[in-house]
Length: 561
Ligand SMILES: Cc1cc2nc3c(=O)[nH]c(=O)nc-3n(C[C@H](O)[C@H](O)[C@H](O)COP(=O)(O)OP(=O)(O)OC[C@H]3O[C@@H](n4cnc5c(N)ncnc54)[C@H](O)[C@@H]3O)c2cc1C
Image (cartoon, rainbow, N blue to C red; front, side, top):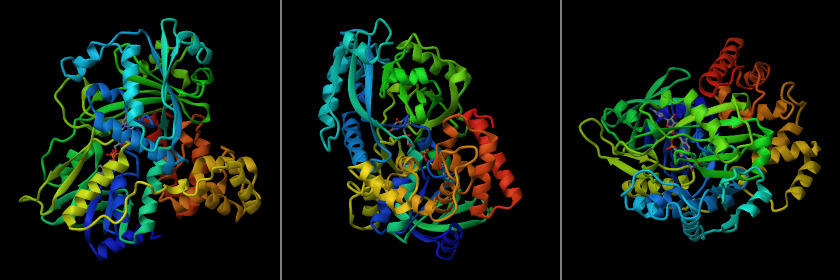
């Protein structure tokens, strides 16, 4: 694998590329990966880290979006369910089945309003009753039949539901249950896909912390935000996958567009064992008092995720979780579990991001289409290349959207598709064992590492755990002083192999260390010291990295270290 400097130098020496992909969120990365598999010379740049924009702010769900049925988005739901099922097969280490329960307050509500909404004769959703939800779930099961891996839905009466969820509010009359899936750490999928692309093709180059700053004629200007160096590259075609920044990026390249009408969504991570137990291993997905659909999701290490909001916003840089949003999310728990008290003291992490939705008239944000589209800007007097902008695009549908984008690119380049990504396993999802214990037995015999440690590695990295464990066994190692769940060599392995540029890349995205509470200045300093050793940072740079990470944690996540 080339180092970052080698990649930059290669671009300097040969600035021609068939395709430049701007933005390494999941959609830019997916397109980059697909094109790499087709042997296209492609460059991917991101002004920040891989998967750090909208892709780091999702509800972590791989889902068809049952709610989108009432907007009439059948195509999207069918595609998303197929893709959800594929993710469970291709990335079993980072996609987990999720039992989802919808508490319902009455039988008939919404029967007349749901069709009206579908016909666009009604703006806001009315309360959704059991019959409407039942009909939706019949469609959902039908659309999920391709590559089905999970059971179909069922409806529970109150007394049956109480056996699993004894704390349910007294006016909950039914509970609908079905399976979706969730991703404990989506940012790791981003890195694995980047690595895969660079591995399958020498013609694929990815650089984080490299920003598109302008364009003229056939050239696009790039700036390395680490060194301040600039260069110009000459692509035949540009894919603008800058998510909520799409119009800003077009503007930087001298083009005026208004493709995006972003809405902000925030989430909280709570350390609340009683609430975690009340979830009984499954997610609650329900209608809040204002008709918005919200969720309570049991997250990793006993934490609980609650979300989300949906507020129009123009500048994605300003997306942080406000006190009003925090209050809204704390209160939503009581809507279904009135006996559980949730307060600020339970919050261990906040995150917020902007959905790159298409522009829409003012109105109820929940009605804005969640489907994706490709907007083409043909060459004009300013630039000599066409630009394909990727508008919308759920996490769940990234592979299909990327394939559709790659097909448009291939058509324009006059090339044929060589392979489909439909069945390509992702990263640590390759050679995934059916018998986890047996797999761990082998690794134990190979490395002589502690069994519990190996199981943790398997949970964190899937079958890539073999590489991590091999590296750990190959030298002196010890648990971190301030977080014994990780070892020194595990951190070294991540820092050395996963394109970590800043310390926050490691504590926020390569791992979920900072997400789960108990994250301290001592731990940040300890991890910073290890990364400094691998990256060759001097003491000034190491200190600056610690301050940078601390500032991001405070400003964006309300975590003070
Ligand atoms: C609150 C919320 C909840 C969601 N929940 C779900 C869910 O549960 N399930 C689901 O499937 N989807 C969900 N989504 C949708 C999904 O997360 C996003 O649609 C998807 O991640 C968008 O990815 P992207 O690659 O298009 O954009 P992004 O991830 O935002 O990537 C764009 C990248 O472009 C980079 N960039 C911007 N300008 C430049 C420039 N000039 N030069 C270089 N790089 C640049 C940015 O740094 C960024 O990394 C949710 C989204 C939000 C915000």
